[in-house]
Amino acid sequence: MSKALMIQGAGSNVGKSMLVAGLCRAARRRGLSVAPFKPQNMSNNAAVTMDGGEIGRAQALQALACGLEPHTDMNPVLLKPETDVGAQVVVQGKRLTTCKAREYAKLKPTLLAAVLESFNRLKSKYDLVLVEGAGSPAEVNLRAGDIANMGFAQAANVPVILAGDIDRGGVIAQIVGTKTVLDAEDADQIKGFLINKFRGDPSLFDDGYSMIETTSEWPGFGVLPFFNDAYKLPAEDALDLPKRAKGEGLRVVCLRLSRIANFDDLDPLAQEPGVDLTMLSPGEAIPGDTDLVIIPGSKSTRGDLSFIRKQGWDIDLAAHVRRGGKVLGICGGYQMLGARISDPQGIEGLPGSDKGLGLLDIETEMTPRKQLTQVTAEHVASGAMVEGYEIHIGRSHGPDCGSPFATIRGAPEGAMSPSGKVIGTYLHGLFRSDSFRTAFLQTLGVQAGATSYSQTVEQTLDALADHMEQHLDVDGLLAAAR
Image (cartoon, rainbow, N blue to C red):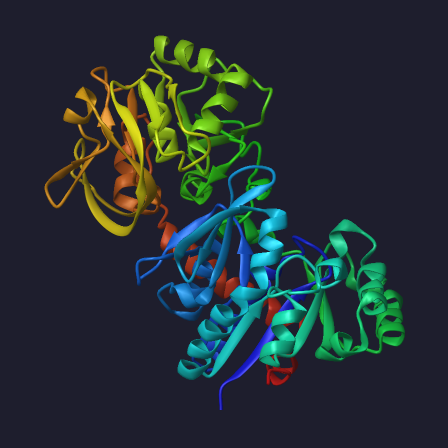
């Protein structure tokens, strides 16, 4: 009979996604068929699934740890923030609506049926489903109508392991405090705890660990030291991206947009020995010695176009191009490079039109239909194959589209300026393709190709599972599944 286990956090960003990924790989290596599940995720870092929808990037990584293709059932509710108070609501891979936080509070209870439907489909197919919570169950003010933590765990009768983050400090209060604020029924659903991100000598925490066990009356499953290779796995939160990587090599600057999306496009570049990737924070100028500026994807293209201007980055970009520097715009970044972006139907906000950065001779019109597809393309300049995906609204056209970045089944994709210095493409995930990444970096004077990104990720998932096996009671964790 299929079983399930849920990892919830005593706070946000305690490492739940990575813990589930490591458990997925450990369970798979025991011969179990295992699948990941997250009832509700909030992220603009999405993956396109085999069934033509989208889910959080963390669940795509967890699927890889299980040896599976991503599927919309693995993350049935995805919230994609568009403003500080509103988000697009994606249900089972498809956009349902856009609403503000208060409106979503009313909508949320109606989504439990879809969440349970997806969960039960996975349970019917796999020996084990490993579930990731969202935020913390200690947010008891959000308990009514909850579908992300205890509301789901109770509805699906899934046992819970609570993870605390000692790196932030106060982990005893995190876990014991959670027990204090939960009602008795929810507290009974928790079958134990573990400590994550420990640095130094774990024996120094022995007394604290015992205190948590005694006070909470929950058994502990171990203390997990900080996993130093975590940076080799795709980050789900833009805050986890390093501001500065190495300080030497090809100078690549990526603009940290206010609604940055699908930023894991940058991970393979960051791991290249000859590349120095800087995530440029708001208020910082683009350095004059930059070789390549990347404008990444955005969940609010016109909003982030205004954000770029507020930082003065539009002026910096123009100067960068005059100096002979290169610019690469991906998806929303591609749209911003053009002469104009029009949104007559108000799909991403108020209806209207904005002047673009004017670095490509193209125009974009936002359209209701969302492009969600995995693609294989051919890079025009090198002939290298690109395995990627499209996840965008809007269509771009104009003279510079006559010099495409790539072709997809013979059809042109993207655009390039007459100088060849400014490039735009809708293709996400392009740098994961080793042959393309090598060819692209060679045009910038970097000898690459020694690193296989997919192999690095697989090896890191194995190393993560080994790390958890060494320091946690993995057999006990899996035995707690019900």
